[in-house]
Image 1 (cartoon, rainbow, N blue to C red):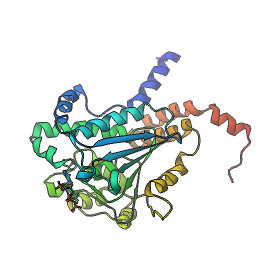
Image 2: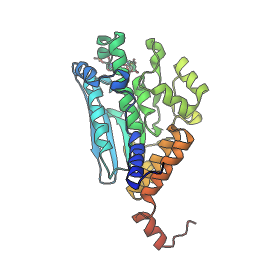
Image 3: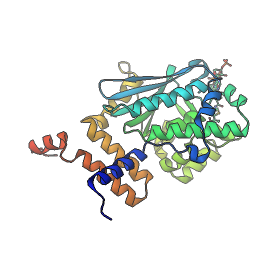
Image 4: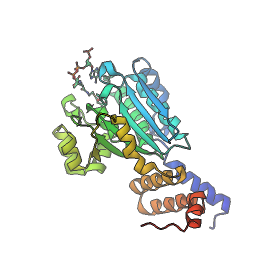
Length: 298
Ligand SMILES: CC[C@@H](C(=O)O)C(=O)SCCNC(=O)CCNC(=O)[C@H](O)C(C)(C)COP(=O)(O)OP(=O)(O)OC[C@H]1O[C@@H](n2cnc3c(N)ncnc32)[C@H](O)[C@@H]1OP(=O)(O)O
């Protein structure tokens, strides 16, 4: 049966919106209000977000007294910040960093101890998987700036960005094995897609420390930053990211959307999504300006 133009529009919009949906909902017996209530009981720290005119936002995991460990309220704030970024139509890029020159030491162990029963653990796991999946699917090119240590859930957080840049002396380590665990925030599934199953197995079963050299070798790190006297690690990361975010927001966001669908969807669905996204930029202002300028790509 042929679809009307309105029907095609609804289908296209639905397919594009699907990419923003969370993994778990009521269908899976997940009620996020329940776990939100529990997480509220573990306050401390914050997740700070600055949206800049350049189209690059900086999100900071801020709990330096605990090496930027995630308190319960920080998990809630992370979800709020991701929702804000989902609604930021001018955005092109995102840098995720930790305060005070260290990335994040995972869950706050005090909260973990208090909710160590299986039921709460599952709910926290589903809540964080939802948030980090939405973070990875943002139509923004994202990079984790890793200084100091990214441990446990902190290592998992780095995998919900498109890229990771490591500072000299920094370490990413999936310490879950030492906690008698495996990742639960989606870090294992994402890690396999980034470094392949053999490297992922070594990092998880060996709890191997990943320094900048090793990270670059296995493709976990996209580069090593080298802050000089005049440039901070954040400024260097902004400069690195600018090579991908330069240009109109519509085009940069479209590039991220087709990569997300190519990575996540079966081929035919990814091709259809690519067609839909293509339709959002074809004949658009950037496309028309480029055609009018008869530009050469030497
Ligand atoms: C569900 C599990 C998994 C997940 O969510 O996927 C997790 O993330 S579990 C948490 C995994 N992380 C850890 O186990 C890290 C434990 N901490 C350390 O190994 C060390 O603290 C450190 C991060 C390597 C830093 O060591 P160091 O430089 O020697 O500093 P301190 O140890 O003195 O730490 C300073 C201060 O910070 C507190 N801290 C650090 N990490 C956490 C944490 N994850 N939760 C709570 N508090 C943390 C540490 O206790 C110190 O506080 P004070 O003792 O009050 O000084």
